[in-house]
Image 1: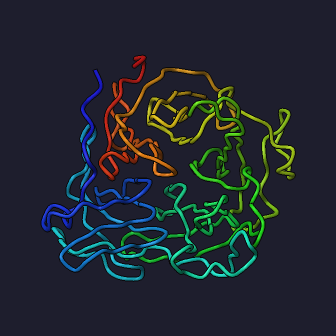
Image 2: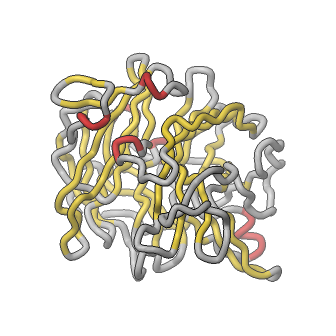
Length: 346
């Protein structure tokens, strides 16, 4: 049986009785026994009114395999020393808004009622120096037919002990033009001296189910240099992203790939708008990939673009028998997480 879902909460929420409506939820264990959590857009209402932080927020707290974190401490905007826990203060913007973006009409994407620029987190990985690489997409969010206008991909280098972003590199940038899906990368993984990253695109929907799409993999041994990126296509890595080919034989509305300790590389593919997913595994980052199981997270409600999304794996919270998956539940307006048996079919 799948464990009942639990909200991922912080001491700010617990102390003040506030619920943080924030997207995504990536985590990475740190050397001090804590884990860093990165979220996307964050909104809440308290006694001071309504609040909205575009882009990203961060929190840190203890973790135990098999348990959902419920006592995270919100972090201040970098640079700023991590607070002494338990910390009851509220969230702050993590990565500043990207400059130079345009809206679909070709006008500057300045923050106003109908739009805002944001850097949305797409993944996180520890480097060999025990610092972190954080991948993100730069986009203009609008109330138009092109609500998520992605125009850049970047990597931030982050030191968790001091809560400092030491470098930030915009690797690919196409102001005013949608960045190709193969260059909107996330799920970073180190393997054999390369940093591997994944991109995906659902190209055909039917009744809320993704029926056609692609998952691509890129690699680089110098993540700050755009010319050093290669994509897997037709059995080899090439420098042209247009030659990238699909590596997982299943279409997905979202892809989250991680190395789960002894369980190895696994990909979580969201199949539909109701939270259905498939789990695939591989021995190497480019595959071949084989399906292992299926499941469904406990999403409810939602409408428009506010639907079940952001299914993400968490290796440090998983066990030998169960995988921890977080997701945004529009029914509760919150990031939740639950355990799923590795080999069961839900």
